[in-house]
Image (cartoon, rainbow, N blue to C red):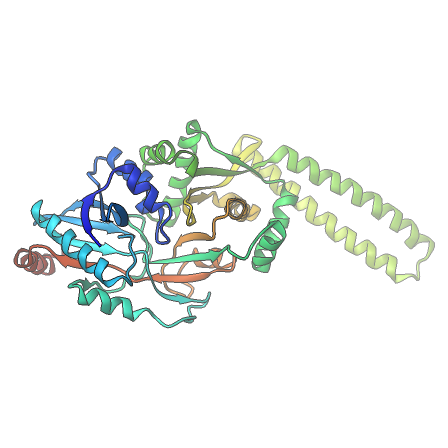
Length: 417
């Protein structure tokens, strides 16, 4: 066996990453191209065994006040059970980093530490073995983090296993009852889905910015979404859920007409058979349905007038497709239209697509890791019935130990990088 640590060509890297079980969009060749467009200088590092790639990583260089950092976001991609390969990769990556003046290496592997059910109860033993393995290689495990972030990969995420699903029927049955109910409502409302062109991205940005302002987090800029669209191409899906008020109101009015006809017939039966209570009960049931439709018409009419147009965006989202998983990244919902449940139809559409394309995992991405009711997005994601996943977190390997100790000391004193 002859191991060789080297920089890989884009083609070599793509072939390896696309088939590796730990592969994810943050380690994809498209992400590599995106980072270059955004002014970064990523590298494609790897290990070859007799000419065959056996380990790889997309590495991004970040700056601190004392030097640069090699960041492996959801990397590296290798068999961590292969001790000799791991030892070789760590040693060679450190030497490579030292030659170009890197201060420290930071790994954030795409490896699970713990899995929980929807209430945060553990469903398997935490992966402390991996933490010990990394410690033996000289890495310092950073404290586990909780909470949401839009600036980096989450340390907690919510995922749904698709491997046992085969068609629309099995997919629908796999959802919680609330999702099944909301999807039926989507059909009643006439919500339509539309995949976006590049020219639609300013409208997508408007939606995500409005949502970010409401929920008080930082949104990506328009140029980022445009770069994702251009770089990821067919692997990126920007999608809107839209409502046509005129069509919706017309359909609701038609339902009212049909119910009026039923009510007229029942009233005739009530007049003819006044002692038959079943006709009165039926009348009350149909009248109750009618009132619901009237309220919908009134609400939709007011919303259309407020919007000043008949066709409105209810919700939207961005997804990235990998051979290993479909990832739900960024989204937005207009508060005024939340009762039309557009996000549920969007998720169902992409889950259906993932299953059709043979993708085995659907990644709802970030959650806070707190199950006390403080995480506003957790309830939405758990309704699709998956499991929460805590990753092993962040590991730091000093490349220049003395300088790194000074850096850590100053960082502790100043609270800054």
